[in-house]
Structures are given as structure tokens and as C-alpha cells.
Image (spheres, rainbow, N blue to C red):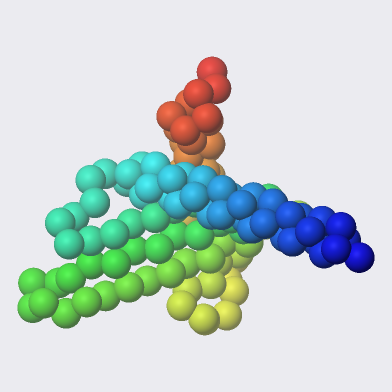
Length: 123
């Protein structure tokens, strides 16, 4: 019985470590992704990352000239029939035209930079 308990605790710790490593890598990828669009303004934060095989996140925070804090989160869902985005809880809308082109270019550059800068892979 005690062996089962230790085994369960050990397995749980292993899963927790793996989850923390995954979160750490996502945070590092988000920083690289946020830099794709130029320098992040002072007192600002910008993140762009791939959460899973179908989901991309863009998050930006900044303080305007009046000292007011702003934050916008955009979620992109890649589906077989197109890419759809939702911003701050609004309904999903399809990407089209320039916006779809820019998203594709950003995702391509993100993959290239993350593979080389974070994982040391040749691209």
C-alpha cells in the first residue's frame, strides 16, 4: 500500500514538473514572438505564441500618454476552412485579405525564430 502511495506521489510530481517546464517554454516563446513586431514600448508587454497546434495568442499591454492601462488579447483558431480570431471575449470572425497574410507571415517567422533561438535548431 505504501509503495502505491509513493508511486502516485512521484508520478504527480513528475507531471507537475513537466507542466511547469511546458509553461516556462511557452513564456519564452511568447517573448520571442512579441519581439517580431518591433521593440516593445517602455512600460508595455507584448506576447505572441502558439499555444497548441490550432491556437495562437497575441497579448499586448501598454500605458497611454494619460497613464491609462490598456490590455488586448486576441485568440486565433486555425481551422481546416480558415483562421478565425476573437478579441477579448468577442465572437470569432474569419481573417481575410491583408490580416490573413500578416498572420501567416508572423506565424512563419515565429516558428523560424523559436526553432533557432530557443531550441537551437537549424532552419
